[in-house]
Image (cartoon, rainbow, N blue to C red; front, side, top):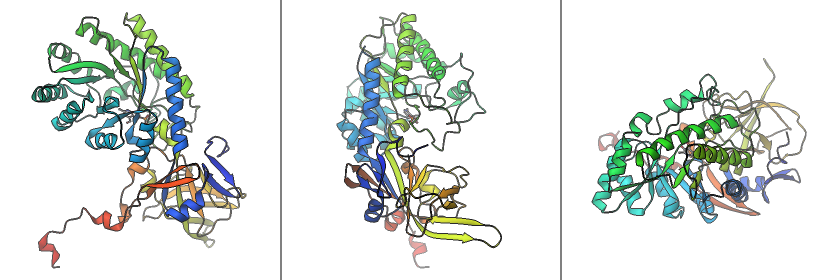
Length: 460
Ligand SMILES: Cc1ncc(COP(=O)(O)O)c(C=O)c1O
């Protein structure tokens, strides 16, 4: 497997790993390690791949890529996506705030989430943002808040299609079936509670039902899964349409996220060892299944806004993580073992303590095309076992060398915590040969900023 030809933003120049036209060793020196680095060019090209593939296969109406902000909640990254025309899926008040700070037009924001307060619903209605309902209680909140504001709420129902025709296991938990997991998961309105909401919605003068949503997560990359999801999704849409009457069809249809990343080796997915279909294939499979199922149900697709919400697929290959080797140890007494002790941690990389297979592809960034000299455990800085890559082949590596972990762009930076009272790493955005800090390294002072010492303990 070639690390560089399969990610066009990475290259080796004069022994050094480059991301775009930036030398990663210089980035490590200039900004300090550990450090997340995000490629603007890759982010834009990933978004364009989604937009153009779905636009090609969905001529009936607008395609809206509702980038899942949770995968990379950094304001500057979001502003890149906004500039390029992406909408935004948000979960909770914090993500809504980020979407607004990221400049997303309110009509392209969705307020999602499984526990919404009246306050967030009120804010969404005020701003003209559609609310994706996750329970009947949220319908009540929408009606109450809309009435108080004297402004109709636009709502979307988050559905839980039952994949009755699919017997496949989940790639997350291979001992479980996708069919079961998509029902046992908390999110979405239970179907038995959703159907009785329809007459209420129909009768309400304070809400307007504009669409439907579903999100199943990355349970499988197989066409059979996506086809089943969409077929059974449309079964529910048909029931809603019948209940709403007057030829109601959704104006917005979201199929959620859950698309695999191009180099699908993320640590939270157990099964990744089969080929990821291209974005083009995803687009073709999902739009065709939707169109055909709608037609079979006698429902029109004309003018429907087709939404996808990629998170990992959009961001994963945009990011790398740089760490410096502080100590190189070698035991020869009882065993022959080498360790490269780095300044990063499993708690910044969202992986477990013992990674028998490397958690990520890695490169010694200042010796990028040197031959392998021996095997070493690449380990992290905390008091945990912290083996980020066990017995990883490396060139001769010494204190001061920089290691790059690749494909760390989604769901990693955001999970960082302060174990061992470590300040969390910052993030740099690169474009061509330009590099800018877009999230500062946390300071020790900031780590302590939430601690409160009661007066009675101050004199000790
Ligand atoms: C509603 C919703 N949409 C999209 C996503 C993004 O999923 P993924 O990163 O697997 O594409 C998530 C992830 O949890 C989600 O909850």
